[in-house]
Length: 258
Image 1 (cartoon, rainbow, N blue to C red):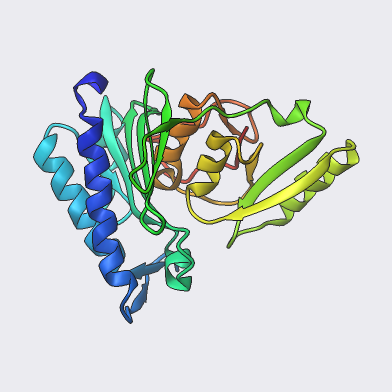
Image 2 (image 1 turned 30 degrees about the horizontal axis):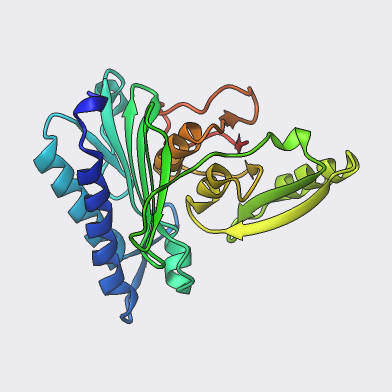
């Protein structure tokens, strides 16, 4: 199945969704609040419509889980071989703040593991993608793709760059940083919104991303695939095992990208 997916088509879908999002970005848009208290804009809805309609047209046999679409009951989806995992606008808070740090996330998941990822940042035209066994790549402003290779593990470094959320820094993250300093390491901070944090580790611009706060599967799936193809690991904080998907509860545990 993975070899039957046209990655160029998926990249175009992400770009098309990004174009729709930018048409809203420059307007005086309204912000609604969902049941879970998270914000929702017209851009979320438009981006979702582009992605879902396009994926269903190209790959009608592959089901879709999207943040903005009602989730299929676990009793049905637990047996899925493949499915798309979509966040049409990751970083709605960053979108509302107009700081440009929001992304379009499209992942293909095989059972419980992301095997293809596309992350598009419309502001700045940065496109990250990966396909299992074919590496992780970045193109900026339409430039030739550069292959991403994360660097050495942070435990082997004396100076560690930690990337953290611009909107969700927690006490647990502060404790993690303090522990690094206690080990004699110098710590630099990078702040970023949305799935860009995982992509910064994939790029080697950050050494570790401790996500010690809540996220949903659609927040991480696409960038998870990219980080792994760049030679990084995405590990549950409590068990050290790889983060898995299509759980009964789609809430992620705390995790580290390293």
